Length: 320
Image (cartoon, rainbow, N blue to C red; front, side, top):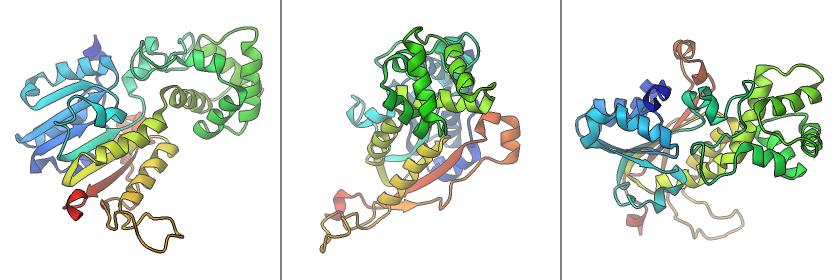
């Protein structure tokens, strides 16, 4: 069942291969393995490729392990969040990487499985845990029912880009004093009341995405994960990130830009006391977008933005 549930179409496969260049061989990290689609592409590019795949979703790991069984000698799968790369027991094997991939956001199978609680379809439980139906993080319902009004407003404004964030936060707090939020209909009902009309699919998607990002601390995980993965790249290693939200893309862009600067000292510092040399270089001046043909075949790829970065040919430590 898990295998069927995670039959997920790999996004921007040609572009991922173009920038990761698996034909060179080497060790690669897929930090969001999902159903294993990108991993298959990497493994089939060259018999010398080895892949370590991470995913915080246990159902995804089970599905990926089944799909990747023919390549089992060249694949290691670990149930983990990419923010924990530096702290994993397998960290010594996640080193000197030829390349790494981060395909962010929620997968199509997760959205489609009602019991996972990501969808705004009627009757869907408000769960939204990226790590599975059980885990350390509180479900979306608990967040909505307990978060202060100010925090709710911030989430709706920053993560959901909602213009009516104040009114929406007030309406949520007012509603939960009499009836707690349990299913998708409850949250959609508040949005409809604030809009004074039926909410569009796009408006509902933005609201649910905002709650999901908050529940899973996705932006905090991304900031930590990017730095941890960069530190594991070997000389000339490449990192490819595919984002689906403007805030994700901004974090990736700023990280790649900072790593590519020779000096990161504060402007008022008269003498450079930082690394004094760039850690690598940006390979994509602007984010790449999926082709019209891909969007037509896979509608959920339409918001994808791909950026790539390459580590310097010398390690930071070797620069003295």
